[in-house]
Length: 136
Image 1 (cartoon, rainbow, N blue to C red):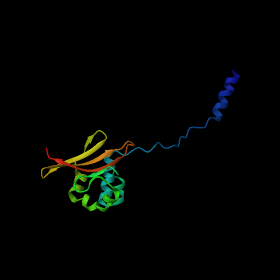
Image 2: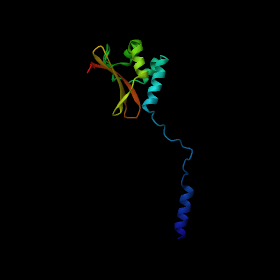
Image 3: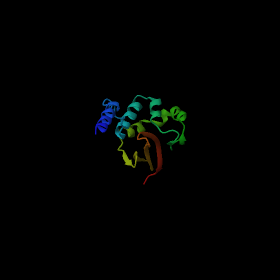
Image 4: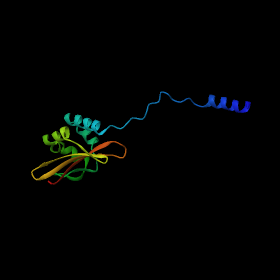
């Protein structure tokens, strides 16, 4: 019995204490938090930050730039991409969830337009572009 008690006492002394000051891992932002960050960067015309929040090389802009747009092309065409209409849709559009992704859509001139944000495997989001198709 003394051997067991001694072993337990030794084990308790040598066992490192729990780190009560350890911080919990940072949680991933919700889509609404991500969108607010994205729109703030867009309002300030922070091209590099907006590009960081976008999905390369899987960025598509079906109105003029095509699919798999490179970061350099995105930055060069920043003003052409983020027209007043697009900025308005990003700021006040109603976003719909589709699995891990979010999008907003509208119809103009016989076409249906949608802006997509992809939910990444790591829990973050990335802006993946504009998609255009025939209006329903």
